[in-house]
Image (cartoon, rainbow, N blue to C red; front, top):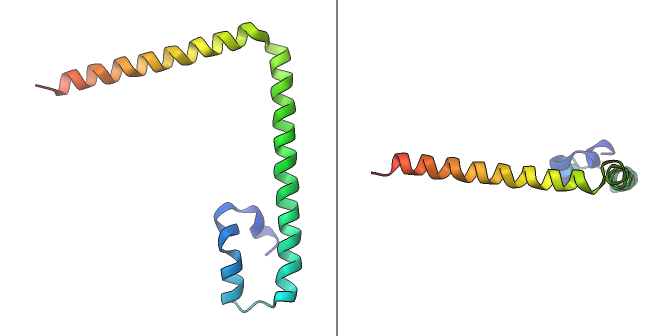
Length: 93
């Protein structure tokens, strides 16, 4: 029950499965709470780490790199739209 709080789909089904297995509530509750605390600490820590990494990358790369990344994203969108338009023109009579 402790580890199931870390697995996305299983986390949702754990209480129902514990009830179907007739797990004692006194045993289920502490394991579920401990797993939930671990899950929340893990995800908050990962979010804090990702935020710190993004701030570090921003300082490292600077504004010009973000402009280049934006231009690259626009280029990808334009190429995708052109390819779709050409494919659609080939299939229409």
